[in-house]
Image (cartoon, rainbow, N blue to C red; front, side, top):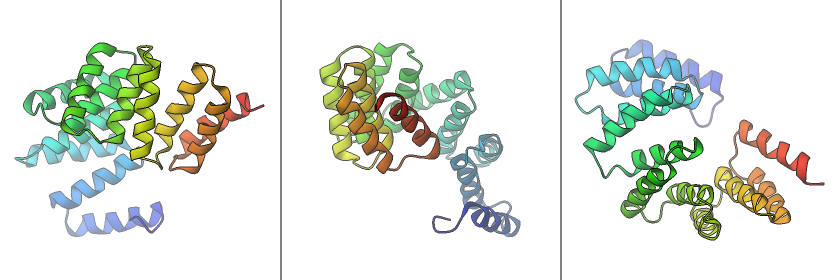
Length: 209
């Protein structure tokens, strides 16, 4: 799936599904492929089936929550994430996802910071968690700490365009325009998807004059 194009991988998955229509590993693979392609309505139908069929359905619920969020059903997504964290308070990834999702919505930033702090207590050297912390610190106007957190995140995830883009956004907001432009250009070289590339290019067209 990683070395062929999407159309070929979709055909491959369909052929596997026909042979093993009730195999949970196959169904999970298909659902994850739909999620990766932002076809979350289809993914959720399969996740619901897997949740019903599986005794250990924790991960399927987490992936369903991500899909609901992508479909702009944040209230439903949040309910699942809160339930998962109540069942497993040491699930660092659920803590991070809930925290970051709250942060981008400017929703109860103090609580969001507490959630990501818990995640970092579990996994101190996770670049994605540090990025979430830095973004929340930025929104709480703790600029110096925000810059440091995201710089550390980039050290751990040097190819992650979204994290580098965040640093560029922070630099721009505090008037460090040249550094912002440098980071945005660097973000384009990383692993940015088409949507992020368009967003970055739009900023560069507007401000890199």
